Length: 352
Length: 102
Image 1 (cartoon, rainbow over the protein chains, first blue to last red):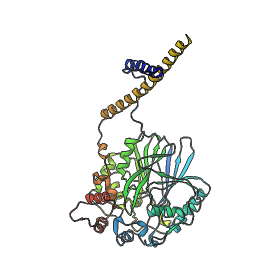
Image 2: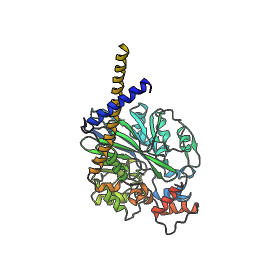
Image 3: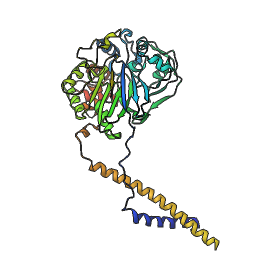
Image 4: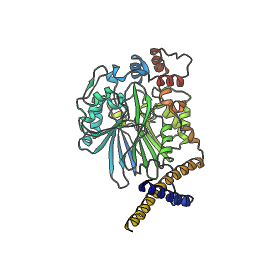
């Protein structure tokens, strides 16, 4: 045996004896497997820039049925252009130090509509002045992404997060292309840094705020959704979604399992993708019961949630935040909007 | 004499390095054991029922299986020659997904 090898063996033997002697007396308390510590923020304010992705449900449904149903490629559908609006929200996260961080969630569908919306809320100026720190795309669906030009015309270098599950057609549009059949175009190629979010990974934005991507199946050949998680000090976890394709109960369950402090669910904002065509299935009652089991304090919902579900959820005691009539001052309204105001609609705000 | 001193110095350094490595391994093993014990000791919650896979139930997959009219999926199935009559929507959507159609 060479000298070096001999020393190694001898040293290891001594070390083993040392470990054996101390193994029963841990020197420190061992923590459970590391959960995601996303930090804490003071508050989260969401402004509904637009939740009316389309204005007429029947027309939207017809466009899908007439062009092949669930598996149709969204870029192959000649959508009724007069029916398109868009989904987008402004998110303001107040840190514990009082500093406010602004983010744009989604950029809608119809450029004319989104230009109006961004102008109405001063988002155009916030983008141009870099006041908005990042653009977060929830998923690559038409009503959340195809209005990309309306964002990029004010800031083509804005930091962007989008699910890594994008398709070549998405890339074409992002890089300044068009899709004639579908009727979407972008004349402003993206020149910034795109973070392609990977499934099950967390991407911190600021203290108390992070993105997590869920790789779930979605209709019209889209896959994967980014969800925003916030940890509001003394309140708990708030989820903000575009459509919530992974499912609200999955989102809350994931927070419990993976996020530090995630057992304390405070609320949610966004589309919940339940009864978007205003149909009712008795199984929707189970979603209400499931949501109640997490004991949320404040639920702001709109877009693909379905007015009928939100109304029933409110009746069953879920803390649905009511909206106002501000949406009536927008040039167009959804055909399914009701006086019950169970949606946070265009122009409404909610603070967590 | 100096060679002998050098031998013992190297021996002690090697022993320290090995001991450090062994302690690190011990820490990792201990952490694993403690986390498993913690998980076992944790009180089961009714909320654990929601820690499931997407196609395990309607509660998990409602955003696909219940949110859309069934005819969307029947159309997709017919295009691919998949029988849908008498098939539960959950099973139909799961099949479409597993075959890469959705």
